[in-house]
Length: 501
Image 1 (cartoon, one colour):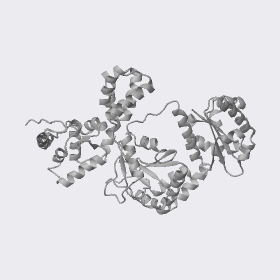
Image 2 (cartoon, one colour):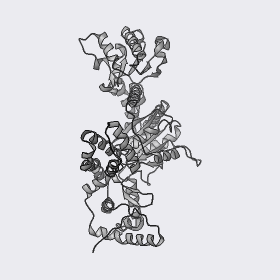
Image 3 (cartoon, rainbow, N blue to C red):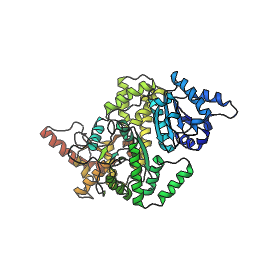
């Protein structure tokens, strides 16, 4: 799937910026694709036979270009023959009107743009849709999370609709996919756009990243001028300009995702100051809308309160459905018993399901089932560094070590692991923090279990619990089981822990 970029040589600097952002694999751009020495006309014809999207950069230069007219004629035949699926016209600059565009191209998507970045994203979006016609992405098991997002974005209790909220969960668990799946029907926007917040970022650098996505420029020199002008702004001015650009993105149909890659949070789990200011200032920009993508819920001590939606591991039913879909995608047979067996090792983690499907397609399902170490190693590698990055106390580590072997457990057993050092209130705070960091989750029966995707990494990084730890949890667990037996309310999922003296 490629896009053919039809343009005048006089506009090459601008179009090359678009091509650079798309990349060679996604576009046919003469500097990338046309070999010197070949007949130019033949090269155009050959490349148009292998393109799915024809993009015309309409300027006063291209309107009079003989080569552009030749490309348009060839593209017209490709459209009639069903080779070219979509056509897009971008009207750039002044001095160009619809009268200059061929009649058949007037039925295309026509947009007036002045910056390479939104053009590249628009083309990429068309390429993605075209690819999905051949390979539909698989997204399952997130009805609960979608309902939570609806509750946040459309509050029924009289609260004002928020300008922003957060999504949190383990890396790779499906946070961005969740928003991408509902960006159209819940937000009435066409696509998401990702802005990474890196270590050392501030209000000015965030403004620069947003400016690169939407502000007009035609070459790198003009972009450098924009960067220098933003660096000279105060933080307040930079954040206000950032919000104006967020508004522009939303009005153009794009939902900004502010993705934390190490620069959004302080060590105590609160937002960096510039992000709190961004949230506060956003109330004055009615068309600004953005979503934070984090691995943890922001601390309750944060200066500004915003809503958060957790994204947890998929349940076994959703993983089983995902495996069946992946088996169809990768064209291998799999039986229900094999799906059930593999699901136990995938631990609700979608990337593990994809990895398992690829391995099964290469080596066969029986080989994968007989040697499940590959699945364990896959998830372990994904989360070893994540566990090491968490600022865990010795007691936090003990909770994770115990839960990696015995899950779920009642709250009383976990609190017992803190009794020698913390009073009950502080122990509760530690449990809350483990949940906020997506390391522990609450079951439907209101007990506590490890987030299954990380359990092998916990064993790798933290080791195993001691006999003394086992003694601490045994007494409250036995009391819980006795009380539950007397009242006939024992949760069948709670395991009995036997501890010898």
